[in-house]
Length: 322
Picture 1 (cartoon, helix red, strand yellow):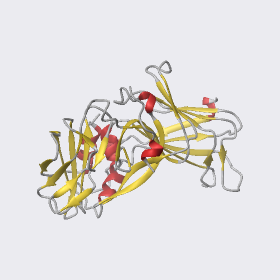
Picture 2: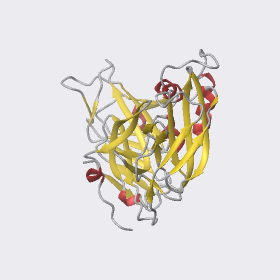
Picture 3: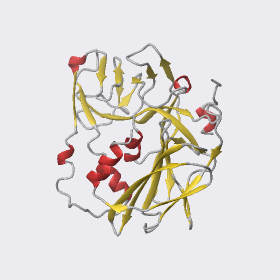
């Protein structure tokens, strides 16, 4: 396989010392809300349908190595003295918060795309991490390593993964989480774990990921673009559209709006690819959404219609997208 250009160019143990729990009770997630709550922004919707994703764990001794195995299969290694603060002493216990994302639908739930600038990325895994000491002071990580099992659709890209950290880009309805190059590195070991494993060094607070630039030459594919119209929306300041690639773990947020619809970045979609469109809209404050399976033939214009639904239904729909 040909060597792809770097993201940097494209972007110009003690288990006994750890305790954890996870908010996963989806049945109670929406208690206290009306069946059809009103929303001011689409980000409020994303915040609501992701609030049960966070894993919490506690570090009680920072002078011994710590390893934490996550529910999603990742392992995080904290070496001795890997916690600091800006000028003060770290006082244990330390509370760590973690979110990990592997499925396309979960990436959409977090209002995220796998892009750096206008370049699509194939994801091997995404996670967010932060920590605070007993006084609520944010801790700074040093020498922390993450081990991500191979479990996404990234065949052929394993040895091209690079370490990217979170940034934001704009779309008519607000921001979308995207990616930029970092100083960390990613190494893939085919023999590690059950099915291969990615090692990410220099883990920092915030969003971290192992991703590779999508290579159109790898599949002899022609880059193209498409547009989406949402016939009953009130405008793209209250409507967002995502596209998930069926072949690889690639998620595109459509960000270029005009009077005729909203478009992908030019030359960012492989011609002939099959995937799923996801439209989420607020109409008079009420949540509406829909999905549509499509084949991109090149310069297409797809038309969608959104229907009323509640946050629990939207969460279930997105969680079901692998």
